[in-house]
Image (cartoon, rainbow, N blue to C red; front, side, top):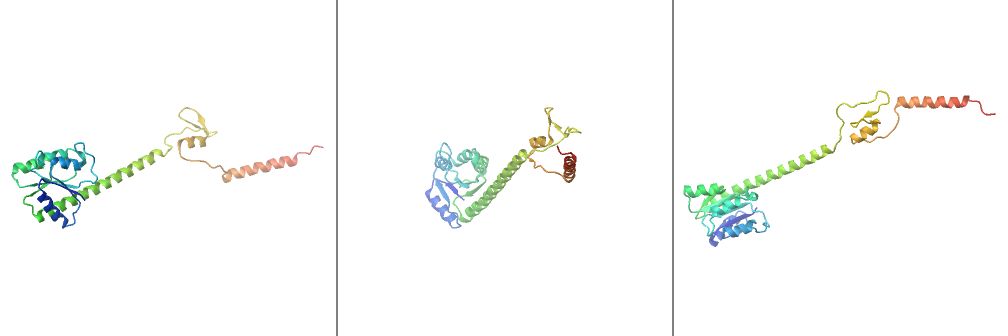
Length: 224
């Protein structure tokens, strides 16, 4: 998972890299200003990032645009609503922290940075981020399956309701008032196909008719 570190101090970059890499977190991106961070994130007209950013460590005291306002602008983009932002600050006043949380930050660590605090905060939020992404993937898969099932159900034609049928010839009257052969009607209103044959009763009757016909032929006198 990729972490973006936004701080105007290269010393902080080196320190965080050492602390995080010691626990196997090596996918790190660095920015020294809010503007550079926006470029990495694909904001303010910049191209989309090559790698998704999973967590942001944001210094509050940045030049030009401070970390609180930068966080507010990042969170205004729906792509980063679920990306946690940790503020990095030496100012732990109630006013400063309230402004940071109002902007969208979810946690903070204090300067000077302590390894135990940094690693604990980062690993905890990365686990949460991973769980959120896994849940989203499951939801997307479920929505895809539901859509496929709905499409399959919509493609299946079924016969329902009262069907007018002639008591004598067994033709069916369709919605337009036309009488159709039963197999034609079923074929138009379902996915069924027909193969023709004889049931035992009809086969016996047909056999009797054939025998009677043969008998008539045998009884007729031959032309002399």
